Length: 231
Image (tube, rainbow, N blue to C red; front, side, top):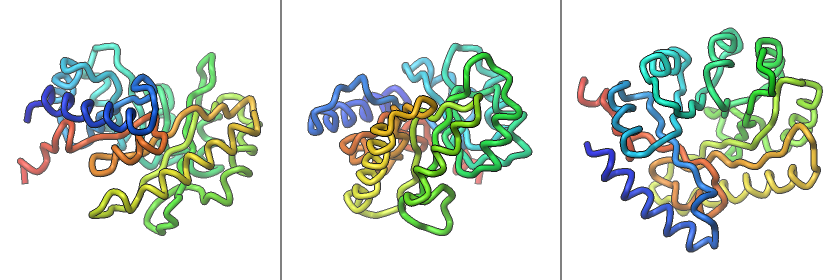
Protein backbone atom coordinates (compact mmCIF):
# COMPACT_ATOMS: atom_id res chain seq x y z
CA UNK A 1 0.00 0.00 0.00
CA UNK A 2 1.34 3.41 -1.01
CA UNK A 3 0.40 5.94 1.63
CA UNK A 4 1.57 8.87 -0.50
CA UNK A 5 -0.85 7.90 -3.25
CA UNK A 6 -3.66 7.31 -0.76
CA UNK A 7 -3.11 10.68 0.88
CA UNK A 8 -3.03 12.50 -2.44
CA UNK A 9 -6.26 10.83 -3.56
CA UNK A 10 -7.96 11.65 -0.26
CA UNK A 11 -6.84 15.26 -0.35
CA UNK A 12 -8.20 15.59 -3.88
CA UNK A 13 -11.59 14.45 -2.59
CA UNK A 14 -11.39 16.68 0.49
CA UNK A 15 -10.52 19.67 -1.68
CA UNK A 16 -13.49 18.99 -3.96
CA UNK A 17 -15.82 18.59 -0.97
CA UNK A 18 -14.62 21.90 0.46
CA UNK A 19 -15.22 23.60 -2.86
CA UNK A 20 -18.75 22.20 -3.06
CA UNK A 21 -19.48 23.44 0.46
CA UNK A 22 -17.75 26.79 0.06
CA UNK A 23 -15.23 25.97 2.75
CA UNK A 24 -11.52 26.67 3.15
CA UNK A 25 -9.37 23.55 2.84
CA UNK A 26 -7.32 24.78 5.82
CA UNK A 27 -10.36 24.15 8.05
CA UNK A 28 -10.10 20.36 7.62
CA UNK A 29 -7.54 18.14 9.36
CA UNK A 30 -6.91 14.62 8.11
CA UNK A 31 -6.20 12.24 10.98
CA UNK A 32 -4.69 8.81 10.35
CA UNK A 33 -6.22 6.20 12.64
CA UNK A 34 -3.41 3.77 13.32
CA UNK A 35 -4.98 1.07 15.49
CA UNK A 36 -4.37 -1.66 12.93
CA UNK A 37 -0.92 -0.67 11.68
CA UNK A 38 2.64 -0.66 12.96
CA UNK A 39 4.85 2.20 14.03
CA UNK A 40 6.73 1.71 10.75
CA UNK A 41 3.56 2.49 8.83
CA UNK A 42 3.10 5.59 10.98
CA UNK A 43 6.61 6.70 9.99
CA UNK A 44 5.64 6.29 6.34
CA UNK A 45 2.54 8.39 6.92
CA UNK A 46 4.64 11.13 8.52
CA UNK A 47 6.91 11.12 5.48
CA UNK A 48 3.81 11.56 3.32
CA UNK A 49 2.99 14.74 5.22
CA UNK A 50 0.42 13.54 7.78
CA UNK A 51 0.76 15.21 11.17
CA UNK A 52 -2.25 13.94 13.16
CA UNK A 53 -2.68 10.38 14.39
CA UNK A 54 -5.46 8.70 16.31
CA UNK A 55 -5.36 5.66 18.57
CA UNK A 56 -8.33 3.94 20.18
CA UNK A 57 -6.43 1.84 22.73
CA UNK A 58 -4.27 3.18 25.53
CA UNK A 59 -1.53 0.61 24.94
CA UNK A 60 -1.40 1.37 21.22
CA UNK A 61 -1.08 5.07 21.95
CA UNK A 62 1.75 4.57 24.41
CA UNK A 63 3.65 2.11 22.20
CA UNK A 64 3.51 4.24 19.08
CA UNK A 65 4.26 7.49 20.85
CA UNK A 66 7.33 5.92 22.37
CA UNK A 67 8.46 4.61 18.99
CA UNK A 68 7.77 7.80 17.03
CA UNK A 69 10.09 10.70 17.74
CA UNK A 70 8.70 13.12 15.13
CA UNK A 71 6.71 16.14 16.42
CA UNK A 72 3.20 14.99 15.53
CA UNK A 73 -0.18 15.35 17.23
CA UNK A 74 -1.71 12.37 19.00
CA UNK A 75 -5.47 11.96 19.48
CA UNK A 76 -7.27 9.40 21.61
CA UNK A 77 -10.38 8.37 19.69
CA UNK A 78 -11.61 5.22 21.45
CA UNK A 79 -13.77 4.65 24.48
CA UNK A 80 -11.66 5.61 27.48
CA UNK A 81 -11.99 3.59 30.66
CA UNK A 82 -11.76 5.69 33.79
CA UNK A 83 -9.04 3.46 35.21
CA UNK A 84 -6.86 4.13 32.15
CA UNK A 85 -7.14 7.92 32.25
CA UNK A 86 -3.93 8.35 34.22
CA UNK A 87 -2.01 6.50 31.48
CA UNK A 88 -3.48 8.52 28.62
CA UNK A 89 -4.29 12.03 29.77
CA UNK A 90 -0.75 13.43 29.42
CA UNK A 91 0.12 11.43 26.30
CA UNK A 92 -2.33 12.88 23.77
CA UNK A 93 -3.19 16.33 22.49
CA UNK A 94 -6.93 15.72 22.27
CA UNK A 95 -9.38 13.24 23.81
CA UNK A 96 -12.26 12.68 21.39
CA UNK A 97 -14.44 10.45 23.55
CA UNK A 98 -15.58 12.33 26.66
CA UNK A 99 -19.00 10.75 27.14
CA UNK A 100 -19.94 10.61 30.84
CA UNK A 101 -19.63 12.54 34.10
CA UNK A 102 -17.44 9.93 35.78
CA UNK A 103 -14.87 10.18 32.98
CA UNK A 104 -14.84 13.98 33.18
CA UNK A 105 -14.24 13.76 36.92
CA UNK A 106 -11.32 11.38 36.44
CA UNK A 107 -9.73 13.45 33.66
CA UNK A 108 -9.95 16.57 35.80
CA UNK A 109 -8.45 14.72 38.76
CA UNK A 110 -5.54 13.17 36.87
CA UNK A 111 -4.54 16.02 34.56
CA UNK A 112 -1.66 18.14 35.84
CA UNK A 113 -0.87 20.34 32.84
CA UNK A 114 -0.63 24.12 32.95
CA UNK A 115 -3.43 24.57 30.43
CA UNK A 116 -6.67 22.54 30.26
CA UNK A 117 -6.70 19.33 28.25
CA UNK A 118 -8.62 19.56 24.98
CA UNK A 119 -11.63 17.25 25.02
CA UNK A 120 -14.40 16.55 22.57
CA UNK A 121 -17.75 15.36 23.79
CA UNK A 122 -18.88 12.21 22.03
CA UNK A 123 -22.49 12.49 20.88
CA UNK A 124 -24.60 9.51 19.87
CA UNK A 125 -26.63 11.23 17.17
CA UNK A 126 -27.79 7.95 15.63
CA UNK A 127 -29.30 6.60 18.84
CA UNK A 128 -27.68 3.19 18.34
CA UNK A 129 -27.41 1.23 21.56
CA UNK A 130 -24.03 -0.16 20.50
CA UNK A 131 -22.48 3.30 20.35
CA UNK A 132 -21.27 5.39 23.27
CA UNK A 133 -21.96 9.06 23.69
CA UNK A 134 -24.41 11.47 25.24
CA UNK A 135 -27.73 11.92 23.50
CA UNK A 136 -28.52 15.17 21.66
CA UNK A 137 -31.07 15.98 24.38
CA UNK A 138 -28.45 15.54 27.11
CA UNK A 139 -25.72 17.49 25.37
CA UNK A 140 -26.31 21.04 26.58
CA UNK A 141 -26.70 20.04 30.24
CA UNK A 142 -23.60 17.84 30.01
CA UNK A 143 -21.47 20.57 28.45
CA UNK A 144 -22.67 23.08 31.05
CA UNK A 145 -21.77 20.65 33.84
CA UNK A 146 -18.15 20.61 32.68
CA UNK A 147 -17.68 24.26 33.62
CA UNK A 148 -16.71 23.23 37.14
CA UNK A 149 -13.74 21.19 35.85
CA UNK A 150 -10.84 23.60 35.55
CA UNK A 151 -8.62 21.11 33.69
CA UNK A 152 -11.07 20.40 30.85
CA UNK A 153 -11.67 22.55 27.78
CA UNK A 154 -14.44 21.40 25.44
CA UNK A 155 -13.04 22.03 21.97
CA UNK A 156 -15.80 20.33 20.01
CA UNK A 157 -17.89 17.24 19.41
CA UNK A 158 -17.29 13.80 17.96
CA UNK A 159 -19.69 11.26 16.53
CA UNK A 160 -19.63 7.89 14.80
CA UNK A 161 -22.24 7.63 12.09
CA UNK A 162 -23.99 4.33 11.37
CA UNK A 163 -22.49 2.18 8.65
CA UNK A 164 -24.38 2.60 5.40
CA UNK A 165 -23.82 1.30 1.88
CA UNK A 166 -24.78 4.72 0.57
CA UNK A 167 -22.82 7.43 2.43
CA UNK A 168 -25.53 9.95 1.61
CA UNK A 169 -27.71 8.11 4.12
CA UNK A 170 -25.53 9.32 7.00
CA UNK A 171 -25.41 12.96 5.94
CA UNK A 172 -28.32 13.91 8.29
CA UNK A 173 -26.32 12.72 11.31
CA UNK A 174 -23.38 14.94 10.39
CA UNK A 175 -25.71 17.87 9.81
CA UNK A 176 -27.35 17.31 13.19
CA UNK A 177 -24.00 17.34 14.98
CA UNK A 178 -23.06 20.58 13.25
CA UNK A 179 -26.36 22.14 14.31
CA UNK A 180 -25.78 21.01 17.89
CA UNK A 181 -22.29 22.50 17.79
CA UNK A 182 -23.64 25.78 16.46
CA UNK A 183 -26.20 25.89 19.25
CA UNK A 184 -23.55 25.39 21.94
CA UNK A 185 -21.32 28.01 20.34
CA UNK A 186 -24.14 30.54 20.54
CA UNK A 187 -24.19 30.05 24.32
CA UNK A 188 -20.66 31.50 24.44
CA UNK A 189 -19.52 29.28 27.30
CA UNK A 190 -15.91 30.18 28.19
CA UNK A 191 -14.96 26.57 28.91
CA UNK A 192 -16.55 25.25 25.71
CA UNK A 193 -15.55 27.15 22.55
CA UNK A 194 -16.43 24.05 20.51
CA UNK A 195 -14.58 24.93 17.33
CA UNK A 196 -14.24 21.37 16.09
CA UNK A 197 -16.36 18.59 14.64
CA UNK A 198 -14.66 15.20 14.59
CA UNK A 199 -16.75 13.18 12.16
CA UNK A 200 -16.39 11.21 8.97
CA UNK A 201 -14.44 8.02 8.31
CA UNK A 202 -13.13 6.22 5.25
CA UNK A 203 -16.53 5.55 3.66
CA UNK A 204 -18.26 8.87 4.37
CA UNK A 205 -15.66 11.61 4.89
CA UNK A 206 -16.72 13.60 1.83
CA UNK A 207 -20.24 14.02 3.20
CA UNK A 208 -18.79 14.88 6.61
CA UNK A 209 -16.59 17.61 5.13
CA UNK A 210 -19.53 19.04 3.22
CA UNK A 211 -21.48 19.20 6.49
CA UNK A 212 -18.74 20.93 8.46
CA UNK A 213 -16.22 18.36 9.73
CA UNK A 214 -12.96 19.89 10.89
CA UNK A 215 -11.31 16.53 11.66
CA UNK A 216 -11.88 13.38 9.61
CA UNK A 217 -10.68 10.05 10.98
CA UNK A 218 -9.27 7.77 8.27
CA UNK A 219 -7.84 4.32 8.82
CA UNK A 220 -8.02 1.68 6.09
CA UNK A 221 -8.30 4.09 3.15
CA UNK A 222 -5.22 6.00 4.28
CA UNK A 223 -2.78 3.73 6.11
CA UNK A 224 -4.35 0.31 5.53
CA UNK A 225 -4.95 -2.59 7.88
CA UNK A 226 -1.96 -4.83 8.56
CA UNK A 227 -3.94 -7.25 10.74
CA UNK A 228 -5.74 -8.58 7.67
CA UNK A 229 -2.43 -9.74 6.26
CA UNK A 230 -1.67 -11.62 9.45
CA UNK A 231 -4.94 -13.56 9.62
